[in-house]
Length: 462
Ligand SMILES: [Fe+2]
Ligand SMILES: [Fe+2]
Image (cartoon, rainbow, N blue to C red):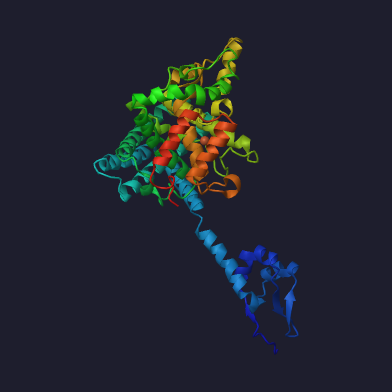
């Protein structure tokens, strides 16, 4: 057998197996040595047979393809290595499985330990890299512990093992330690408003996945409501807004209320917003962030949750909201302010989805002359009574949530585009305010100032 192999090299069958589709697409001829000792091509239809043959056979390729094959193999390797979103998702799943096996006491201990660490960290002057890391870890643990618990609870209810009442009692202590943890973190964040760059590059914050999204939304929500309160601290703010109202905003609110109240004319700010623009009190500033942390607790994996495009699985996407709302109202005892913020975070002034529609229809059935008086309210009771369409903390969460979806490197919104902060803000204004009256325009303008006041480019530093 005297075949000249100087132009050929052996290629490992494992490399062919791993990259078969790319090789076939590139039309790379695989060769073998036949019985006569001649080098002959292997027909592509036979390649599987050769690869699976119990008799080991050398497969050759022309050396001209060497570089090309190396590049394909390298691209694949880099892709595999550089998928931090998947890594983070895998890690979350593993943690959830671990938490599922824990007793309630162990879960409470774990969150309490995090809480102690965060109370300790409150003494530090700035958010150090270590504090930032511990903070994100504790947020991730707390939200995943709660998530795995309420999902388990759901099964227990379904199998008639436990009642809602029993579950709520059991979860009371767990929720109490979680709230304490959140309060410590909120206090740390409010001492250090310029936060984004300390968190960048932290797994479960900047590396994609559901936990990272919840963590970023939580941090930004906490930071932004403080900013909102500082802006509204000045009396001149209210004077300015009231002055600009008829020219810049009244039509927006009029368009929304027209759908629910054909008698109402919106002239001044107080016509659209119940009791006018207000501020959040200290209690709200400390507690509302729990809603931001748990807002997507009902998400299941494998769905891209941005609802800006029609091609997505809309039904399943919408279910995450109802799941979240159901789980936090049935399994955990939460103040109305928090559960309504979660439940209303995709309402988009009646153009989205959530419990508002049911609430509205109930009122309409009771009294066909029922008209909703306001577009926006700061009061949770007013939302329960259907006195307004939008709930202020939920309108904040909507804005932060949409913004995060646009700058999130792990999402595939609009052909895989990740937006810069300016692009994201422009799109939000064009699509979510001018074209569709979904986000609150006054709140959005304060949010814009907030984002532009940040030193780093967006909350992600990638
Ligand atoms: Fe959501
Ligand atoms: Fe979200």
